[in-house]
Image (cartoon, rainbow, N blue to C red):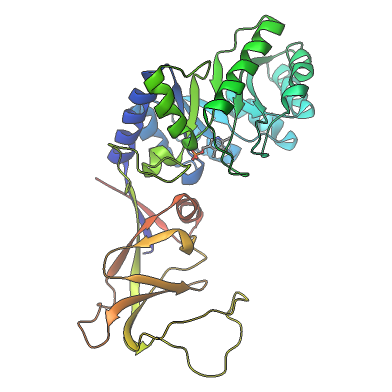
Length: 356
Ligand SMILES: *Cc1c(COP(=O)(O)O)cnc(C)c1O
């Protein structure tokens, strides 16, 4: 410990339910693996569950999955000029916004005799990646002339940086933009990727009305892995929300006062924390810290409350003093949000264990 317990069957189940649900409206899914450090077993569970693509933001993660023998189409979510050659060699498709990078992908496509596919990302207001719609026609015109490169689609991404909702209006604008581009350049684009796990609310309404427009793909990480949509963090009916559980070992368990005593200064992270006096309490320390995960995104099992953390300790309240102590060496279980999962899966200190 610490270790993260991963129920692959639950991830596969979530993927299957989402593939059926979105698939009923003609929407294919990319399973997004970046929060799992491109774990091959998790990618395989997503492929088993029915995704047609595995998408990751890191080329290193895609390489890891390919070496492990995961068979699917790989999509690189974040392109970089400096990784253009690796991208052509390892990814089938990449998401792009910059001419220089796209031209380099074509260059390496020619050099390695491969056809690289690209999806061009459009800015719809969230202000992370994407071209402004007015700049799109110029880029498309140049891109379709490049050798060994195939423009296969358009994409947009909302609710990531600016917290802008992928609502019906945004999706309609994106659909219309797609149709305008297809008409102007006499193209038929095969992947119109309307967003991520935050698109669920839009989809629910669009599903009822049978009006998904030209959107025929979504890129889902959080919904598959944690069973939640990402606009309000609501649970998606029928999905598992605890496919990942973080276990940490109890290393201290004592009755202590709840108020620090002595002259006060800053804590080790430059904060001046405030405390509530609850009298003497049973306090538990687990061997887990900011080095291992994003502690603010953890939820602890019933009977405990997270009081705070430092680099290597999480301090828990375990009820009134004088009652039965929590045993040294026992495990405390935590739920993770997307940020905690991302950090825990990336930590070399957190062991990964598959459970049935
Ligand atoms: C991470 C990422 C996703 C997946 O987002 P979730 O909210 O986990 O579904 C989709 N698209 C892009 C471009 C991403 O970087």
